[in-house]
Length: 161
Image 1 (cartoon, rainbow, N blue to C red):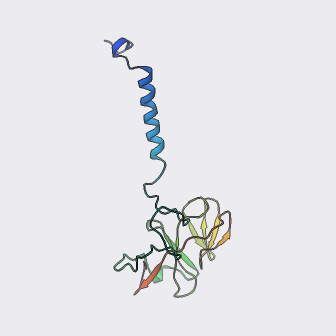
Image 2: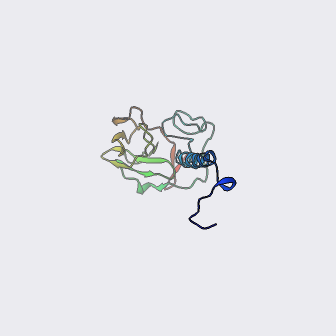
Image 3: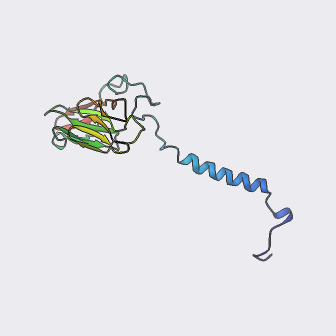
């Protein structure tokens, strides 16, 4: 059979088979874009992960001995902070020697926060602003604060607790 001849008869795929195949490919592509594979914590306190205490740490977890350091104390500016996207945490230092941890996911629509300036953590998706002191909303559209994440100082290092 030459390349320009149409496939007909028993060798031709049915219209139903072609449509089902195209639908299966489309569904696979659509579902592949639905998530990152890690939907345990959307940062809004309503995730599907393990139960959490009011401070945002897993209940019954205790300390995290030997945890990899997030940063050195000197790397977190007083009155500012630093975003650790891979670890899902924002570490701030509202006053000298006081370190706070918060989720890096905005409670408005789940975008990662992107900057810290003038005492606020900002999500540039819709410009919600949160306090570096307690994660409270300083400017909407977010209505809920950033959930706290426990951090602690071990020597000169800041680690997740």
